[in-house]
Length: 453
Image (cartoon, rainbow, N blue to C red):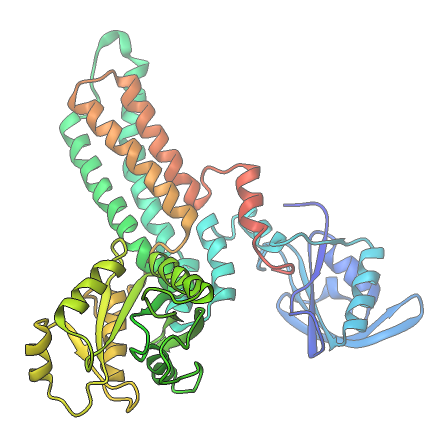
């Protein structure tokens, strides 16, 4: 445990009904007790709440409630005091200044959670999930962060490491008896194990795209030619007049971004300028930004006007807008008054969704297609997904080392090289949960947290 006591405001800064100031460390009770006038906090039972006054140098700063948590039964596994006072920025500042003068130190960003990790409260992946939980802005991102905080991804990684450690120890034993040329680790079983672990690692890597999108929102670009009804479609999806709609082609000159929550999944909708030969420099810049947005998108909603387009035009636009492996949803707009069968025969593509953005017909079907594009055939969002870019990078490195180890076994390479590859894979997996960590890694992880958490 850390010897010093840290303090910070744990609620958002600004005017509010209440503010919570948190202390953690060996001296939390003594320091808070010098300011808090009521019951002796160090003599009270853990997880109890007490009323008193905050008095510093004979000046009453506020009335407050103190909640105490005795080590190791606290968030940080240290002595913790939370002072709940009135949410005046002036009062908060005075209380913080008083506690610092009484011996506390201002906490760094994420230092409470870093102490929780260092004291064994949870592993590094779970600690990172705390920040994700605070930042969650949709049902899906909330559930994923909660699952990870409870050990969803960590348990998978720990299981893989345990399986690898067993064979790694046998290889190390072989190295100890190198002169006798014995094999304690069955190479056939080791190959099967590596295949199974590689399969698990690849499944987690494949799921990262979905997990990252659900965590940060799914970037969804609405693209097409001018006057296709893209802005009208954006307004229909949002059910509000967010974008200017006009019969004049080329009204949208820049990207417009809004968020849409569909069944707990957050979509970041981007309405773009129409794709065509630009008539002026401003429109040219708008078209350039459209293509940039398409290249960075997770989903492309290609929208076209069924009244003045043909199948060749649609095919040309699809080719122009195709970007990597991002799925494309084809939307035939302004289809009110015409049968779906007639339109399908005209354009010859059964995967086109025909709708009328102006009349808000077919909008629910489009939302269903959006969720299908994200879930990729799943009926619901999985409870456990890799959402963290750091974890994804570590998994990629572990995959490389596992492949090298497998190749080394197949070619009867020296035991030393096989052992080195497996050690490297173990280290990469260990970095995810903090079994292997450095000061630089921890500083990088926890610096992204808010002060007070």
